[in-house]
Image 1: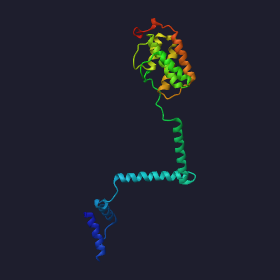
Image 2: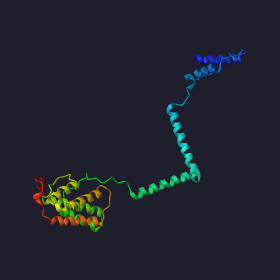
Image 3: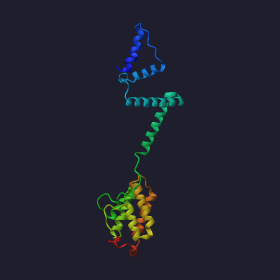
Image 4: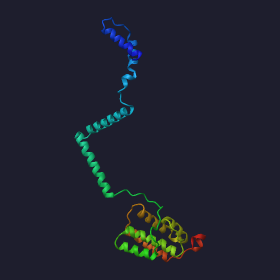
Length: 229
């Protein structure tokens, strides 16, 4: 036992052994008690710092729950009902909207399978349009546009080209259609990578652009040297 502990114990023994207790002042007694209670032997079973932090956290959570229960009609039961309703609404929205799609990006390539001719892409696009599968119809018509420009040597055949890149490069040799080419590329990206749904009007715009491009002569004098194969 520490010196302070011996001091207090001695005072207690003197008071219970028939001996007159030693008369000490209030301040010295308080200091002696403080020293003895600071002995590690008195704190062996104290909770750890982590345990005290967890206890404080759960006390805080409990106080929040009590406050919310007091402010909610019906008390704790009403709070549980509200939580169930909120969860049901979230689940319904998730089921209705599906998994969130990633935002639109211009990093995806136009072609993702075996090389096909512009005519094949047009045929596939028309088949999708007839079945009112507008997303697929838009995608195939954009591929037909890019493949047609490659077949006419207005674009260099290049794997990994994005729709935005194709529109920008084609706009140099077909300047009268620059804005429509960019709009077509944006529609393709929105449908393919942005999770948006196309409609008949979007497909018709790409179909009309494809037809107009086939009738347009390139402005070769304005094209950079490497733009034409």
